[in-house]
Length: 542
Image (tube, rainbow, N blue to C red; front, side, top):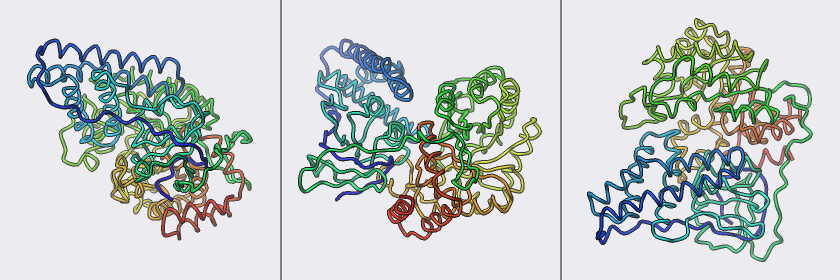
């Protein structure tokens, strides 16, 4: 019996297919005889990889298409190619080694930035491995063609691997690395495939078959052959589209979005509104600050599918973890604890004012019920500063995100200066457990079922009820139906998640009463481990 972090619910079993690993670190010699000819090989190899990825993107849809297109763009990036070519001519490196070293410098920079940018490291490494394989004339790493339903096992899965998965042929996913917010986790949940990450030793065990429980994180190597079976995960087809408990407690079921495409998908999935609009996704490629008019257009495209419905717009979550060129961020020794979110807005209040003006005008055009919230709030004074500016801009409802333990501890006072709060469980777990959310070695600490995290959320829920103001959750925790039930019992009044989970969570919450969810939450709070909490809640809700 092996164990890891369950990141996508469901139980399945079947034969194992091991995902091909990269070729490894290419040798640094011997020096090429013709440096110019060797350097010229890099462009054609990168173009071939980019074309192959784009071809796969053309036949994909939704989030898979977007991930493949992003990886294709990285493969075609002239800056990576140019740096590799320079390494050939200046250090006399073979082309595969030059690509490997150029990609390493890009990955180091992203890793140092932390947060969203650190999440792109796996993308860079995937592109590197594919270009190196092309230069070496060997098969690229990744998922082989599947001929029967199988359990995929890998060190880790690259975005391009997960994006192309066929849920009819993939019974479950098991990786030795990764965490609750990795590409593997997010896409597995979107596709309804059971998944367990951070399973140390699964590759060394060399199993022929596996039984995988994506809820508890248990991965069993059967002692005798088992008959393969796929998970039965409810799609929530019986949900009526209105989030309530069985006795009528209203719980808004909302979606997280970052683009107009996301918003359309969320509306089609039946989301009652948007609990988190990540506006920085409209800025990531910008070298200059977009004008108010350009921001207005980008925001209006996201708000349009939700005319008359609530949308919570998060102001720029930018800074050291999502460096934006026009903000000229200074290098920092520990970016996750640096100038980000509200701290950037306070240094550049003019940028915040222009963003608020664009949000107000976009809301007026589309008829969406828009609220705004600021990220990375740590103190009551920061919350009051933001609320004052939002109100002055003409926005009636101003809130803040609670992602820092300090804010959770003063939640009662924060409610006195804002209209609502939203809990970002991904960052709150990272800061509470002192565990990098991108590091597979500490993925078990970053589990949203951690009792310490649940107790902090319970404190916020009590403060919300005392103030008679709403508290929502917009982290990945909201997409787990069982954990969503715990959150409701802790006093959370809205849940925002990836669009694919909307109907499943809505249907699950309608099965029990508010009082029963309070009992479920109390049972989770007194659990000593995440495994105990998951098992107890599962038993109570089954």
